[in-house]
Image (cartoon, rainbow, N blue to C red; front, side, top):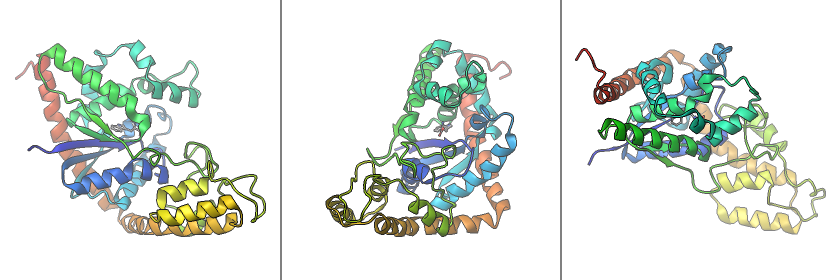
Length: 338
Ligand code: TRP
C-alpha cells in the first residue's frame, strides 16, 4: 500500500504559541510518528509576505523561530521534510496555472479570507497576492499530492477550494493528476484555546498568548493574569467554570480528568480560590512546556544546523514539486521542449 501524504504549514509572522500547539502541532507529531505518512511541513514565508511585503525582515526572523518551534515540539527532520515555501519555485508556477481555474467571485466568497480582510483593516487596499493566497495554498497542497492536511478548523475553506481546483484541473485536462486532500482536525472542543484574557482567539496582536519559547517565570506571570470568573471575589463564593480560562486550559492540558472534575465541583460550590487553581494550572503547563523549551534552547545554540535542515528539506521538496509541475505541464500540453 502506498503511504498517505501530509502537507501542512504555518505563516512565519512570529513565534508559535500553545494555540498552534493544541490546534495542529500535536497532531502533526502524532501523525509523523505513526509511520503511516510521508510528511511535509512547510514554513509559508511567501504567504506571510502577502500582507507583510514592507517588512520582510519580520518574516526572515520569524522563519527561524518557527523552525525552532517545530523542532522543539518533536517534528523530526529524519521523519518529516521541513521546507521553505519561497525556495520551491514550482509552487509559484502551479499557482499561476490554477489562478485560471478560479473566479474572482469565488475568491470573494472564501469566508476565512473575508474575515481576515476585515481583521486586517485593508479597506479597499487588499493586496492582490493576499486575495489569491487560497490558490497558492492549493498549489502547496497539490504539489506534494497531499492526502491529509492537519490544520485548525479555520483552514477548512482552503481545503474546500483546493479540492475544487484539483477536481476542475483533472476534469479539464482529462487526467487524474492532482489529489483531493482531506483535512485532519483536532478533537472537537480541544483544538481551540482561548487567549489569557478570555478572547476566543489566542494571538500575538491581542497580546494574550503563551509562547512555546516562554520561560518558566513568564508562564507563571501569564497564568496568574488569566481571566477567570469576574464575580468570584471571595474564596468562599461559588464560581463559574464556563468561560473560565483556567478551567478551559485544564480541560485541554491536564490528563488527570478526575482531578479536573473534582476541582470544578469545588470551585462551583465555593471554597476554591483563583490563586490556588492558577498555581495548579501553572504546574500542569510547566510540566508540558519545559521539555519543549529545553529542546528549543538546544537547537537555538546551533542555528546553522537549523538552516541546514531547512535547506535539505527544501531540496527534497523541490524534487517532488518539480515532478508534479512536469505532470501538470504535460497534461496541459505546454511542455514544448520535451
Ligand atoms: N494558511 C495557513 C495558516 O495561516 C498556512 C499554510 C500555508 C498552510 N500553506 C499551507 C496550511 C498549506 C496547510 C497547507 O496557518
